[in-house]
Length: 226
Image 1 (cartoon, rainbow, N blue to C red):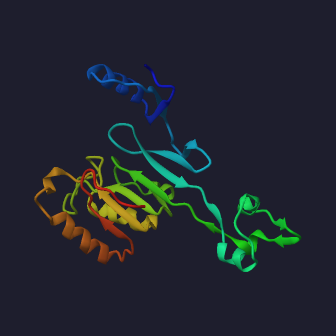
Image 2: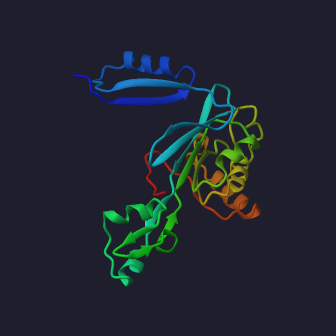
């Protein structure tokens, strides 16, 4: 029985036919309504937006059409519960207007949102893989909390541009320019599976470029908190 839920899959042109071929090639029970949405985003484009977050995308330069993605939580206005307590007021639904940035009158007392609330900035994360070195990506990734970016090759590999990928020096440079607080270097070539040269190179580059973010080289299925 088909589900009433729709699973939207965003990707570059050709995504729809690719999904269709996967469904035809493998026998599995799909109860979801799959909807492929082809993207072309020469400039940053918002592709999904709701009350909690928004997702944007932008084209990146690769040997085939590829896209980078960014998820950003919306800022949330929270209430200083301790300040309310000092006024003898307990939190309640009537305070929702304060969270909307509006003053409230409660039992003859004017409660000012600027004094009793604070803005909690939403977290953001960017996923950027399968691209050659191009600093035009920086405005898209600037200011994110977490950057997931490819570092396919080691610093010694000087043909990364020809292969449409980044080496660790290029990835580290983009990471620093982004201003991210945390960086996850992914999509590392299997040639480094038993070779820690890329790890050592990253440490040297981090120091040389005077970076100030935390970073790691996660394995498949590793989990981390944004």
